[in-house]
Image (cartoon, rainbow, N blue to C red; front, top):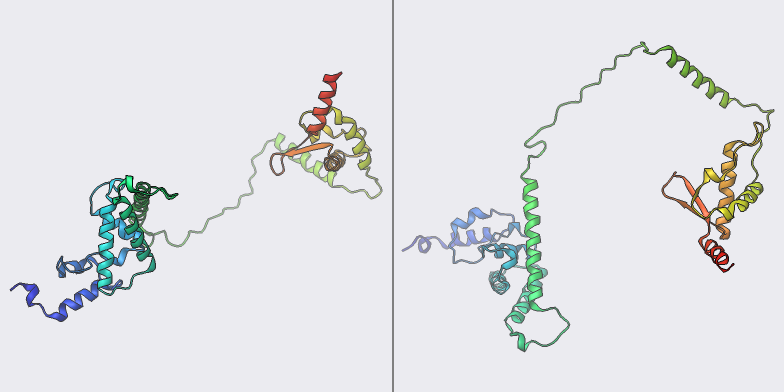
Length: 293
């Protein structure tokens, strides 16, 4: 009489119950149960029907792109039947995959001459698509295993202790020559003069009307993209408007002309140079008039 026949009945039930427990021990229980008993697969690592299919496909020991979908479907359906025989509650997606595989198997076994013309893809295409999905799943699982097998922080490797304080040694020594000192003095004085405010001094501003008239006068020449700085006038006298006023008023005038449809504006990136030109339709119209003349 074999060991299996002499084993207590409660022992077999206990082993089988532990095999069906997801949170219980996994591969080590396989040595305690015979190979002809139900549910040999370790379900602890499965996250869905594709994972079960991948495990079954690996048993064929061939390239996933060359596996027999018919044989794989038979193995999966056998797995579902055994699980239902053991009163194992399966998720809905497992049953959906089982029905789809049964349908695919029936279409694969049907001769091509007897297949009806439908809008559905050919069963060979569906089988190849499933093989590619299994191949992709295998690649992802290998990537996960490669990442998890690397040394983990605070488990295999450890960081340094408390950060070391940075020691700052103040120094009043300045290394510079006479030219550096004079350049720094001139730069500082220039900043102070520019910051000087005289309430009695009247600051002239470049009016928006003058900017519009000047931009309209230059409009026939703006056939190509031209920078805003080139279009804005230069200061004419020391007591007149400053360069900033010319640029600001010209910008406001260009926005109004663009809104009216006489001008096109372009800026390649934020805070980059602003370019402008005459509207393309006006350029084509003027070119056509010159050709007619």
